[in-house]
Length: 370
Image 1 (tube, one colour):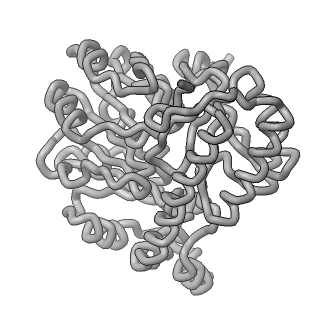
Image 2: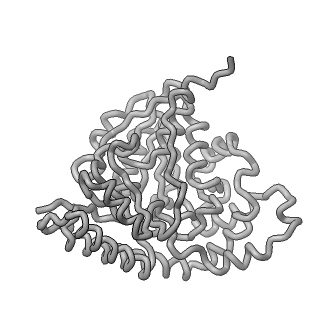
Image 3: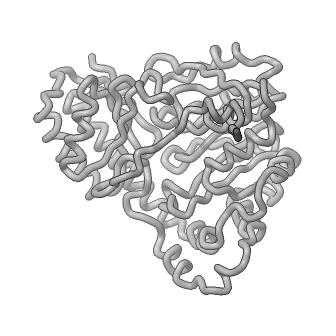
């Protein structure tokens, strides 16, 4: 009888709750206003001949590299950040190798590591999701071949100083350090400028969030040119579709649109956090386009009550495999003024309905009731 590899048979399946997503979608950290009009203009220009040809990635990679201030050999366009993670695991992990992952974080790191038959070593974040630098470095050994860090982190919104990540790269030269900057635009902290100097550093970006292109699945993996040549060996030459390649230059050109959306998100993130504090809800100050809130044992009712009001949010309770220390937590995406106003109005109603007011002020530094 045909059987899949043991690593696949024992793999935990990651199934995001995609079904029935109607209403205001504040559950997947997508843009709530969509892409630039320039992107739509380029989509309308696509014709049958373009769609009949295999997509050519390299010319657009050159444009992206110029935008980032890198050489074209340092940049690979990928089918979202998910593929970037998968390619790194394929290029650097053998069965029996180890990958260090600070949890809670994006679930796909562990999935792709285990697909290669490698071992996931989870290092738990500290109090209030502080980055556990010492604990992580203590786990580094000759079998460590990959270290994955989301910066800012999902689902916590926490950020790690660049100097800390550089120390980690230097402490584990035999390991690929992936710094996933999917939420870079909402934070501004980046290690992209170090991609020339640090051979084992890889930086991933996505156009799914601030650029509003989640449906086209396009991302970036950047790193040292010699190492990127190894990653290209395991990548399909046609991994990014023609529509995504056609519109990406237009998306990059319209930085005014991106900056405008990011500015609204940052303003509304502060507004939402202030409201959460006023409602007595525990939250963690975020550097991304979402806020993690601790609801407690009523988290399921909270999510359903918002859904009944036409608003989808993400339940990150710790009974989910990938979210240790997220007991009773819910993640709220931040978007436009209109959408934030709708969320705040619904939050006030639901908090009252479920009797969630703790009567305690919230410390704005760490989200813990005082």
